[in-house]
Length: 156
Image 1 (cartoon, rainbow, N blue to C red):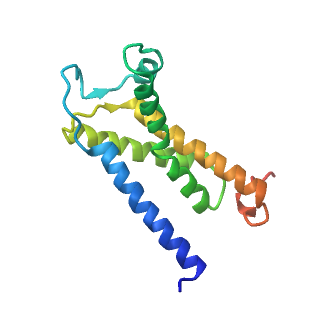
Image 2 (cartoon, rainbow, N blue to C red):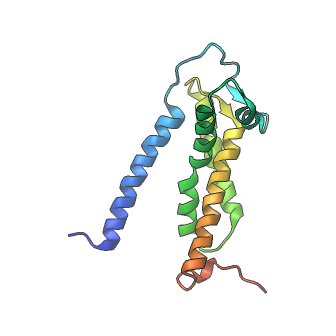
């Protein structure tokens, strides 16, 4: 029989493998090419986000799926970093999230998968990781402050 610590490790490993597979499918599997595929890259911040919020031609379910999906892609990273970091600091989380998300977009661009490398995806992915990091730190400090004393801000 597995100890509770070992069981948690096994469950988290299985969740990580499933998450990795879903990331691969969501980010790197080829899409069906479309005839209105204009450019494989968008470097204008907030262009795609604005289009998703205002485009009347695309069903809202697809627009919402794309926007919420991009925010949630790196959400588990925020939780993981909150649990692993010794001190509360948003900057390392932001840098790690931007780095990982940028690597996703570069891979999409180089893979010729008919996906668009989009700066808005980096913004949404990073925002999701930062938001879940902050929520997780808040929950840890709120409900178990003695268990996580090093996560509290040190005031001089």
